[in-house]
Image (spheres, rainbow, N blue to C red):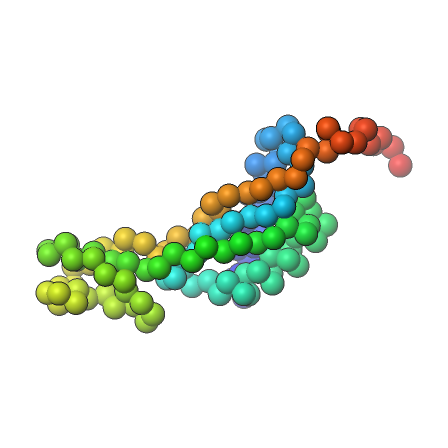
Amino acid sequence: MHEMSIALAVIDQVETAAAQTPDAGAVRSVRLRVGELAGVVPDSLAFCFELACAGTLLEGAELVTEPVPGRARCTPCAHEWAVGMPPRLSCPECDGADVELVSGRELQIAEVRWEEPYAATREPISEEC
C-alpha cells in the first residue's frame, strides 16, 4: 500500500517545516491536493495518515484532500478536456495523439494549519526525567 509511504513523506515534510519554524505548535490540519491520475486512494491515505501520525507533532491532525481533476490539451488543435477515468488521452476534437497532461498528477501539500505556539501557553519543559 503506497499510501502509507505517502503519509510518512507528508509527516516528514511537515515536521521538517515545523523544526524550521520557531513558534510552531502542534499541527491541526494538513490539506493535500491529490490529482485524479496520481494513483492515490484518498480514503486509504486518510487511514494511513491517522496511523502514521501517532506519537508525532501531527497526532490528531485532520487530513483534508482536495481532488484535482485530470485535464489534457491537444498540442495540434489546442483543445482542452477532462480526461476522466480511465483517462482519454486522444483529442476528442481532432483525434490527435500529441497530448499534454495539464493537471491530475498532483500530490502536494497545499496548506498546514498549526495550533497556537506552546511557548506562549506553557512554561519550558525540563529535559531531565
